[in-house]
Amino acid sequence: MRENVFEFYKDESRMTVTLSQGRYISRFKELAEKHPEEVDYIINEDGTLFGHMPVSFLRLNPPHSLSDEEKLRRAENLRKIRESRNE
Image (tube, rainbow, N blue to C red; front, side, top):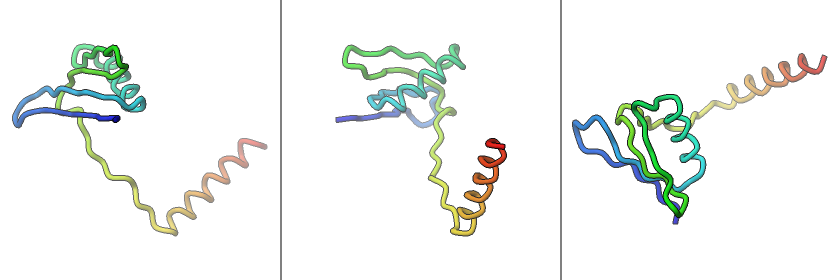
């Protein structure tokens, strides 16, 4: 089972993190490189990550929901950018 856990108590400034999915482990390592004084971790024998970070680093963002018109507009913009690179 691939379990990811972010655990913290109300009004605490730091959280405990346990991660088993590669994409989250990679992102956590990036945070530790950029903020070594605030983020620390170890990699367990089974490859999972156990660490600590500020609660303020946690963000819950829903995926973007674009209208059909916005999707078409973005697709057209991307097509133009790709065409200009090939010229």
